[in-house]
Image 1: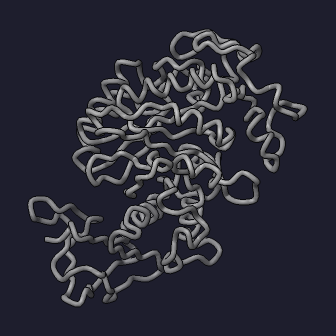
Image 2: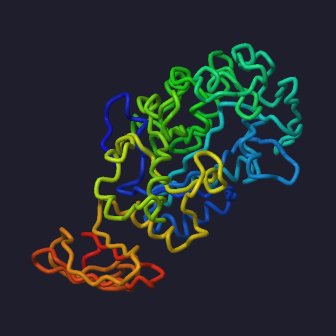
Image 3: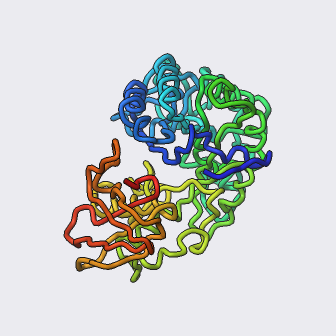
Length: 408
């Protein structure tokens, strides 16, 4: 976790409990199940946080597709994952376990489909009447969009991308104080409950100065949980693979940005695309054209690109379990631990420089260090930092990882 103290970067701090650094995305999980997972596994295993699906009331679409969660009807806390009391209980229990909650905030638009919400609210997307907020036709950007369809037609035109409808979704007018007020009320309600921050969905489709207005109006996090003067963690969904006028760096002055290049490039290396090899990862990060560590929120796959949406393509997913574990192990360890990965067509047996003090270490891939004992492989590091590493190319987990806190 970076030490980010200036007033412009305090929203880049994930507000983790202690030294925890890794969050998980429990997409579409119910609040009661997330609470139990925080207590049973995530807290005891040292996870930092959970990104949860949007908690607000959403459209009910035929056959209940996953994307109905991204079609807001109101800002009432009732969704397919549970009701307001269940959400509050989850946040409290996860915070008590040392696990922070990050909410996926859908504030760019309202629902384009259906007419009934998950909380019972009726609405009319055609007339842009959302009484559960309430929003009316006056609260949308139709008058600013200059395309014939009213939708985004050209991603090379930043005005279209930010003023027109994304796949037909009614585009909220964040230039209006009334609209900003309703969004800020929603997000501050979540902060007061105890969430630690927000993933801002579809941030690319909102003007940075308008998002900055919203962020500036957010409350500090509750002092009793997070300490005095702590700001909510903000990370923006901005898909930037190059070739468009809107850049992810347009948003890094206000928070972190989801770095989609990370998962794309790492997937290509693990899959050996375009002649790529693991040894080329020695300068992985800004050397590959990505934004700096303190500005980035990194991941391999998410709910969008797993399904071919949002910078989708040949992204590693759990369907390719062995390759996915290689990519995930690299992401979690680089550049903090010694890791050896065999992604070759033959076994390896080499003496390698670990950079670690001499001694016995527990391989944290094959086991755990508990009570001074290792349940997996033990690696011997000599006084000069060298260790003999053997990994078969047939192993399901062709990885060895050791670090200073795994020393026996």
